[in-house]
Length: 120
Image (cartoon, rainbow, N blue to C red; front, side, top):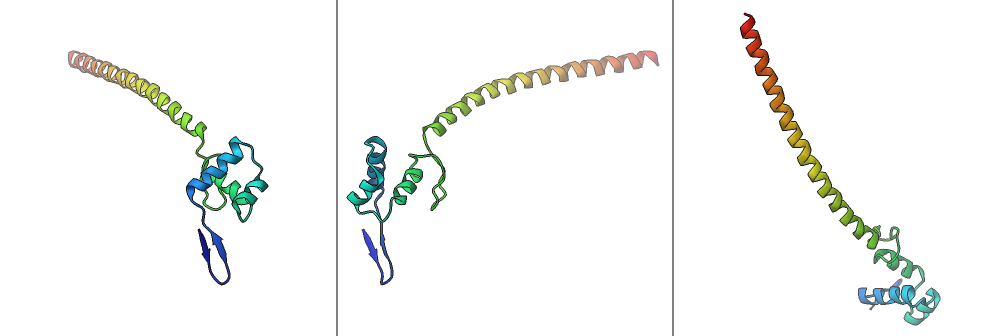
């Protein structure tokens, strides 16, 4: 889709086309210059931005500041949930130990009170 004014011609590319171009470059190894000619892109830096924006490459997209959303980040989410499960079990064990310590402290407090009453 072309958007034209007297001073500027800006091409707007669909998301599907952006994905198609990125996949051609990544999977088939087509050179950036060939893709620029084939799809009549304004520059090869568009493809670099799309690769980052759509998560094909790590790094920030210089136009939208989008973070890399590759598969490594998805696998780290699973690691976080595994850690969370381990942490939850540790928290439960610590709570039980705390309850036991409170009961023991209460027992000692009562023993001290009884001993003080007997000494008076």
